[in-house]
Structure formats: C-alpha cells, structure tokens
Length: 321
Length: 295
Image 1 (cartoon, helix red, strand yellow):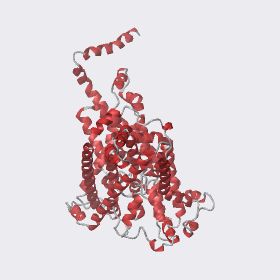
Image 2: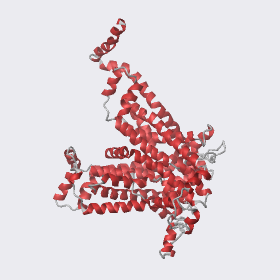
Image 3: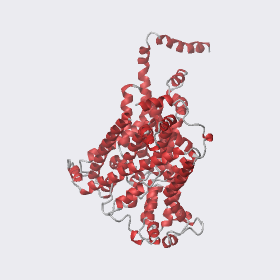
Image 4: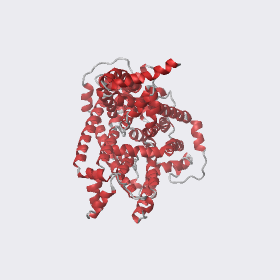
C-alpha cells in the first residue's frame, strides 16, 4: 500500500521538470500517440463519408465514359460520347433552362419573400416569438407533401382551383395547369415559391436583430426616410446573411426534384424536366446509366462553379459595404 | 467598413429596451394582421387536405369546395387497413432515429478529432469533409445503387441509413468544428492529467459542452430525414413498404380513385414534423440564430 502511494505522485512530479527545459521535446514524445487517438476519433465518420460520398462520386466520373445500362454486369468504354450526346441534346438544354428558371428563380423569389417577412417580424415589439413560430409552421410540411396536395388541387376535373374558377364565373380561366406545356414550368415555380421561407426567414430575422438600434436611430435623426435607412444601414449590415441564404438556396435550387417528379414527372413530354430529374430518369428509367452519370458530372461542375463564383461575388460586395 | 467599426463599438450595449415598456403601435397591428393572413394563405393547401381527410371520395369530387359534414376517422382507419402505411411509418421512424443516433455518435467525435489533431492533417481532413457540401446526391446515386446491389443491401433500410450518414457528415463537421473552435483546450487537458482516457474526456467533458450544437443538429437532421423523399425513392424498391413519402407516392399511382386516403396520408405525415418542432423549437430557433449570425 505504501509503495503505491509513493509511486503515484512520482509520475506527475516526474513530468513537470521536463516542462521547463524542453517543452517541445515532451510534446514530440506525446504527439504521435495523441494523433493516433484523434485519427481513431475521425475514422468512423471518415470511412462512411469516403465510401458513401467520395468513392461513388469518383465512380460516377468513371461511369460517365461508359455505355453502362445500369443492369448488365459488363459495359464498354465509349470515351466522351456521353458528353457530346448530352451537350448536343435539346432535351438536356431544356432541363438546364428549367433548372435555371426554377432553381435560380425560386432562390431569388424565396429570399425576397423571406426578407420581407423577416422585416415585418422585426417590426413587432409584442408577441414576436409567437409570430416567429407561426410563420415557421408551414415550412414543416415537406416539399413532397406540399407538391402532392397541389397535384390534387390543380386536377383538371375535380381540383378546387378549377372548380373555384368555374364557380366565380371564369370557366375560361380553368385549365390543365400541369398538362399545358406553355405554362407548366411557371406553375411549378409558383408552387415552389408558395412559402414564407422557414429557415431563410429565421436567418434574416436573427441578422436584422443584431443590427444595432443606435445606428438606425442615428440615421433617422440625420433625416433619412425608412427606405433610405434600409438601403444605407440595414441592407449592408445583413449582407452576410444574404450571401449565406442565396448560396444555400442556389445549392438547393440546382437539385430540384421532388416537385417535378410528383407534379409532372417531367411532362408533358420532357417539357418540365430539371437536371436532377433528367439524371434520375435517364439513369434509372431509361437504362442509360452512363449518360445519366455524364449529366451528373455536368451538374456537379455547375454546382461547384456557381457556388464558388457567387460566393466570391457576394463576399466582395460585403467588404465594399 | 465604417459600419462594421461602429457595430463593434455599440455591440456591448443592449440592443433593445425591455419589451414591456414599448407601446402598441398601429403599424404593429397591421403587421400582425398581414402576417396572419400570409400564414393562412400559405397553409391553405394543408388546411384543405385536413378538411378533406374527413370526407369520402364521392363528396370530394362532387363538390370540391364543400366542407366535411361529420368528423369521422373512417379514412384514417381505412388507410391503415387497406395500405402498408403502418409499415411505412415504422420504416420512416427506424431510418430517422437510427440515422440521427449514429450521426451524434460519430460526427461530434470526428469534428473533435479534426480540431485537435492539428497541423496540416487537420486542414486536409476538414476540407475533404466540407467538399461534400457541394456534391449533390444525384452525383453519387448511380454508383451507390450499383454497389448496394453487389453487396445485397439494395432495398434495405440499412442502405438508406448509410447513404444519409454520408450525406449529413459534411454539414455536421462544418457545424461542430465551427463551435469547437470556441472551446478552450485547458479543460480537456486538466481532465486528461487527472487520468481520464481520451474517449472518456470527450464524452464526459467535451460532449456536454456541445449540447447547443447537438440539439440544433439533431432537429435539423430529424426534420430533414423525416421529410426526405429522393433517397428512399431511389434505394427502396417495391419489395419494401418504403417510407411514408414513398408509400404516398405509390398510392398516387395506384389509388387514383382514393383521393381521401392520399389527403389522410399527407396529414399524418406532417404531424410528427410538428411534434419534433414543438418539442425542440427553443433549441431550434436558437441554433438557427447562432449559426446565422456567425455565417
């Protein structure tokens, strides 16, 4: 017993002297073991991440140079044939156009809606928490469920939209909202933007509330109207939130899928396909996994380039402000 | 530039006077009315679906604008009796709960490892994880289906869980790493000197300090997983009952004359989201705000 109590303090007393003459020496001795321990901490997440994200992404690049159909065990290398097929296909460019309209369009519109709602919430001095919660509630309904309900609301014969129009004496306005190739993309855009923003609104609101009241008051005392105060004080102060929200909305916009599959399945014909839907349809529905992979690579490049470019642009704007 | 300088000067002072002192203004009441109307408009499709979940198919199609005549739960009972909805609910629950639990088991630890390993290794692994934020699911789905087919995991809940784990890791690492930067290393070192192993130091000392991030992370992921449609659509074929959303999507195809069941299924799918939100909304809004102001 005595032996153990005397040796126990000796370990810590043995360590401190090393601290004074050579801390680096002690660190070098302990560092490798600590690093291995930390690597072991990272390993489970890293292995899953590599297997589920990085490796399949690289395989997509490899498959994009083949004519694999998605089922058969063998396939041939076809070089860049898939890429030339895609880039010369009107169907793919139509999907790109729709992705731009729906993805970028909804990113801008939803950000505008969110900002306006956040500005309104910021005006409240009473019951703000309550209204913040209530405004958030619609965002709890998933895009899929919302789209499914809309599909029935817009049904030509029994949907409430057409039946309401007929009741209001406007039967000529009733139409096949999701089957009319002239308007279907705009109907999709409307449904995607039928929101109060949810997370986007919360982020704007948090930023608006961190704008110092003193700045706003100083501007008002100097005689600036509320519009001027917004553009010269509030807007520059929330530039960071605009960058974050626009970037998030664009990343989500590039991969719009649920609404298209539920409401139109890309139709009529291929009119309302987005890039994400094109990849899914070609890869799994039409047994052209090689072509789908090439489209996926193109999508990846578009996402990377647009995210980096828009971030660089908006960050620059932030500094100027 | 001058704006940020002023901000730094005034920040320590409290931004708003106590709420109680503020007077009600007419503008405020107008804003409240406008917000209420907006919420009603945006929620109107869901309200319509809720009302129609109490009506029969004949009632819905004969008079689309009618109101329910009686509040019976026939459709709710029929949904569970005639379709695989119960199994779909269970599947969704299994996927959501196991993915969230596994994420909380591995992601905070990984972020801690990344922050504490130091040097170039730290940066390389961090950037590797963050790159995943820009890899859409569509980019990796075709080889994943191929791989899961080869190992016999295709159309199992395991495949969906694994795909989600990989997809959520990037966001989790981003969230936890940015929070861990603010936690001093001294406390851990003290615990370490006291003889606690690294694993115990992490779970007993560091993990509790991460609670605010963990609650935000759990809620964001739980809602996202519950509401997800694309991943289970791709990885669960007809041999599985699917998740709620996949099951509803199949009903849309098969039960073309059963609108009332689809409305009912949609309403039932929303309830857990609202429950998750109601239970954790304090942490949720705080988490969103913290992340936002930093961003």
